[in-house]
Length: 97
Image (cartoon, rainbow, N blue to C red):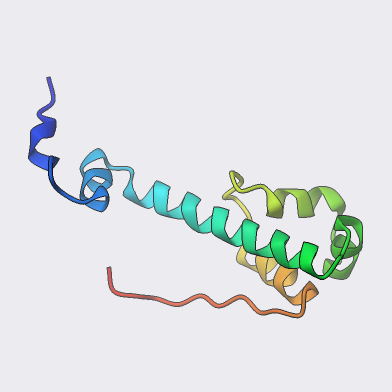
C-alpha cells in the first residue's frame, strides 16, 4: 500500500509531482488555456471557423484540433498561425520552476 500521508497538507503541485503527473497536467492545462483564448478571440472578432482556417492557410478540421482543449499534440507553428490569423502573436517564455 502506498503511503499518501507524506503529501497531506502539501500543495497540489507537490501532489502531482509525487504522482509523477505534474508535467502532463501542466501541458494539458496550457493547451486548454490557449485553446480557450484563441476561440474566445475568434468569437469576439465574429470570425467563423472556416474563415479563420482560411486565414491560417489550413483546413477546418486542423483548426478544430487547435481549438480542442484535450489535443496537446499541436505544433507551436500551428498555434502561432492561429494567433496571427487573429491579429495576435503567441508569447512563450521560460520561467523558473
